[in-house]
Image 1 (tube, rainbow, N blue to C red):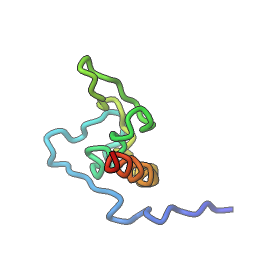
Image 2: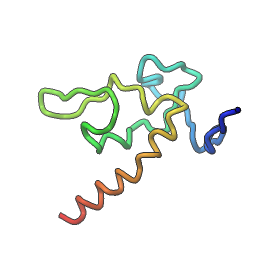
Image 3: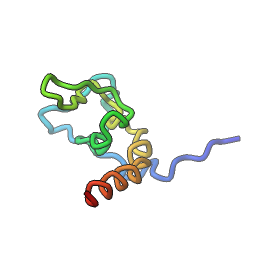
Amino acid sequence: MQQEKPRWEGKHYAFFQNRECEYFPCHAGVPEEDFNCLFCYCPLYALGENCGGRFRYSEKGRKVCTDCPIPHFRENYGRITGRYAELAALAARKENH
């Protein structure tokens, strides 16, 4: 049985690449032809330790994601956007405080 393709596969809104960026490609381990710049600033950053990526904390306590290629893989569009409900809930909690 053939697996159904994600609805965003092949859609222009799900992939953006900026080869003119002075940092391109900014993360190692992602094939250049699949390097997605759409989530240059990862939306999952706000989830802190629950983001699911590879990160560390700096001496000043800031989250550092330089070793995390997750948002830059073409196929991870759904992985990122699939967590928007969590981000919305986080924003709602912060607005109510």
